[in-house]
Length: 305
Ligand SMILES: Cc1ncc(COP(=O)(O)O)c(C=O)c1O
Image 1 (cartoon, protein in one colour):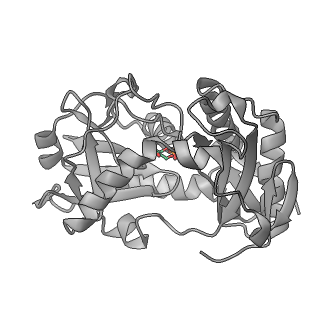
Image 2: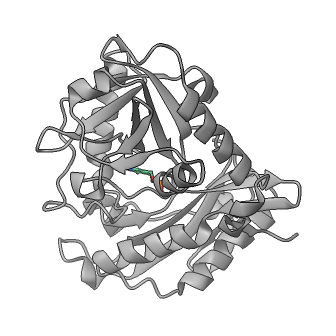
């Protein structure tokens, strides 16, 4: 990771190297930390943060679910995100708001500890590599089952959820794949470790419903809006492992990953090399995030110099 200059921590900007916590920080021990992943893009009118409001709303909802009193309003956190970009001077950045129980008491009652809030950012290319956009990645269906919302609330982006993601990711890498696809406890497709999944079959686009145990991705929502605007037939439905194998097109969506083609699942080639719907959606995503589509201008928060 390349160091930038500043990180917003508990209400003020500190030098990158001073943005530290104690080893007995409560959230570090018990996974009691919520976060967001947001991207800022360069546009002809300067840096613009994509769907900032929706990300901050999800951040506040995560805090609410976990009974965290952030001590900052959504507006204040939005301003911190904008200032973070402004001060570090990197338009193409990944923003990471995070809140966690800080140093103080140990034990399983987090309510005794003060909540620390920070907004960091760094330069981060597409999470699965640039090749994922063009050529696509090789994925495998994980032996790890996606956590169930009766155990951990999936609509809260909590660090604890990502232990499940990391197990699936490591298993995929160890088996020579790029990424995992997790099924839920009913055996139907849920999502990737850090991204949602879409499928195209016979010209119809589909994605698992929120009830399948996924994070309701903001990129997923963006793709659904694009499908409507492009007159692509779309529905939310469950699919099985074998339906992944027989898809015409498959792709991951997420802030970190963007829109990444899946070219193979468990050694089966996806489709026949035609990506007509994915290509259209991918192209529109690139234009909308970079301020080249007027009708999606409302999704951009401009960062003024
Ligand atoms: C588990 C999981 N699913 C899906 C997503 C995609 O969400 P978004 O498009 O809001 O980045 C993410 C990323 O935040 C994630 O961590």
